[in-house]
Length: 319
Image 1 (spheres, rainbow, N blue to C red):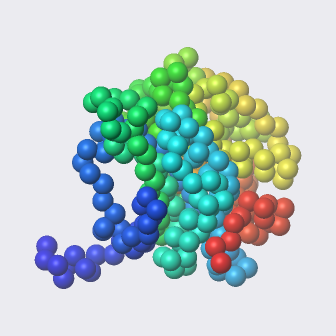
Image 2: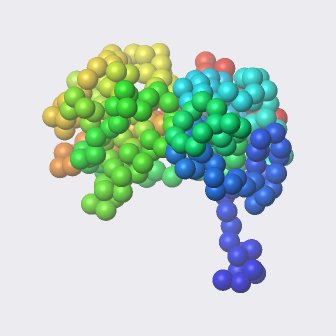
Image 3: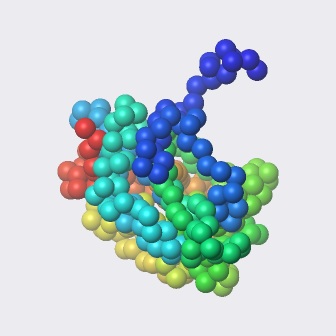
C-alpha cells in the first residue's frame, strides 16, 4: 500500500492525544517497548462517551465525574499516583475534545500506566518504585452493537475472581480474560459471552454487566459476584426505580435462572444497552416493542441526549 492509498483510509480516531502533560499528534505519541505496562499489564483505563445533544447538536459527556472517580480508584490499587486532581483531569479531557473539534458522538479513553523503573529499583514485576504516566485519546463512535438484539452464550471461561485481580478496577491486563471468552463465543457464532464466577453464578459479559427481567422484576448480580461496579449499570438501576417503578434485586443469578429469564440485556459505556434475543438455546423477548428492556434502552438514549431534565446533572457540556 503506497502513501496515497494510506491517506485515503479514514480513521475514527481524533488527530490529537494527551500524553504526560502535552497535547500531541497521535502519530507522535509513542512509548518505549520497555514500558512496564506493556510488559506486565500494569495500567488502568476508563471508557467514557460523549453524545450530541438533541437541543443544540453540541457534545456533552455522560457521567464524566463518576468515570473519573472510578479511574482514580482503579489507579490507586496499582499505586499509580501521578494523576492530576479531579477538576484538572476533567479540564484536560474537555480541552482535548475541543482541540479535536469533536462534533459527533465520541469515546474518550484515559489510561494511567506504569512506565519505567525508578533509579536503584531492581528488575522485575512490581508496583512500588515504578514511575507512572497518563495518556488520553478520543475517537468518533456511534453505536456498534446490533440494535435489533444480540445472541450470547454461557462461556467456559470463568470470570477472574476479585481476590485474583480486583474486579472494581479496569486493569488492562485483566482483559485477556474477556478476550478469550469473546473470541470463543464469536468463533461459535455468538455475539458475546456471559461468564460465571468461581461460585458458578452469573458474573459479567466480556465488557459489560448483565441484567435479566423475570416476573416484572429487574435482577442483576451483586458487586460480590466479581463484577465491575458499572456506571451504566447504576444508571439503569436508578431509572428503573424512578421511571418504571420496577422492583430491582441485586442478587446471585444461577445459569438455570439466566436460561429461564423473560428478558435480558447488557449494560456498559461501550455497548450502552444491548438487548439479548437469545442465550444459548433459550430465546427471550427482550427486543419486543412492549418489553421492559426496550423501554429501558429508549429512556437511556433520551437521557444521554439531554432529553430528560431530571438527569441533566449527569451531562458535562463540551462548549
